[in-house]
Length: 255
Image (cartoon, rainbow, N blue to C red; front, side, top):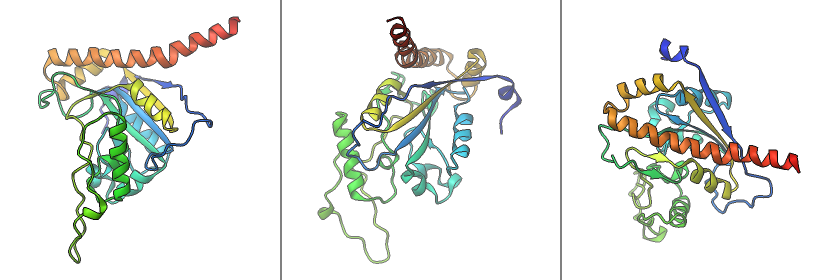
């Protein structure tokens, strides 16, 4: 349910230019979606509301919550998570910061994650070992340090009538509370030939901050630090992909 205060405050959004083009070579990773709509903004800024609008407009069962696997919300989308995970068109919601609450987080150093990999890389459901290998290769490419997935020949055979259990080796687990580097995330997916629509949602700063300290971060000092870092990440993305490109277009017109 959306409260009256929320509905009384206008939401603003910015769409980052998608630098993907038809000339971009296809990625060697088959588990990557073809198109991703990523909704990003500070906590309590209306990002979930916008994500739900996109989900319904695109006729999807659900959207992905940060780096969580789709089955994390199996109660909400029942048994549709595999369809969502394999859908070539996906919606992803990312808060700044994403996950947990500041008082329950052990990360007060404000960790920044450069890329959120496809949902298969965080899924604990049984999936194709070849897909698991792709996740490991992506992590290795990003210089992340995770345990390699077990070789198919070495995997234990399940007993009759029992579903195989997927090994935890190779699963991507993100910090309990973290920030996404919008520019790094966008650039990596661009390099993989994924079509992206990144929607940055903003809301009145006083209203959103007051909402955050009630639910997401009751420690006002930490909340202010998180606010500052989130603003810096958003401003960096705007300066890189909106203002800089506007300046380049203006320069071209003058020539």
